[in-house]
Length: 130
Image (tube, rainbow, N blue to C red; front, side):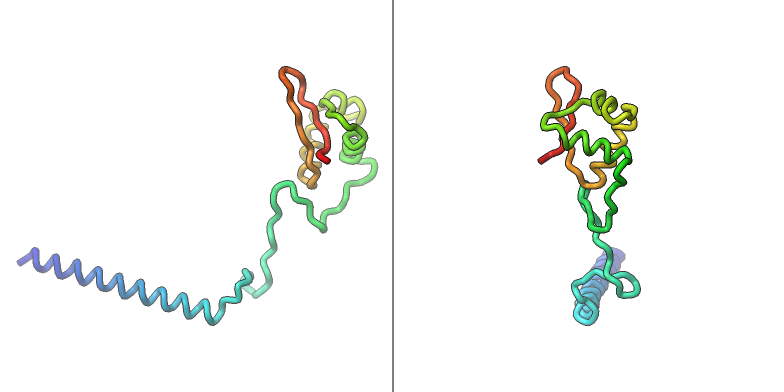
């Protein structure tokens, strides 16, 4: 007799979960038809901001200042057609090697594509991608 009761309760539980699933689907479909505009909005209806992909530069970004370390590094990289190693960049910009690495990182963050070329045991060479 207990096996019958457990079987009946299992069937009832399955029926209840199926009905709940159907009701959920109906309610979400109704909600989408009433409120779904296809545009992701915030709590007050304002459009959500789009996130930038890595290395992408947006229109709202200010260009760097003319005499900043970023400008110096950019000028050196733009004036060379071949790659330049960190020591040369540091010497020509008057920055330390660590500051050059940080400036390269910031230039990439601003959206400039800087290519690193490594050949054998030579030091890596940096250049602006054209």
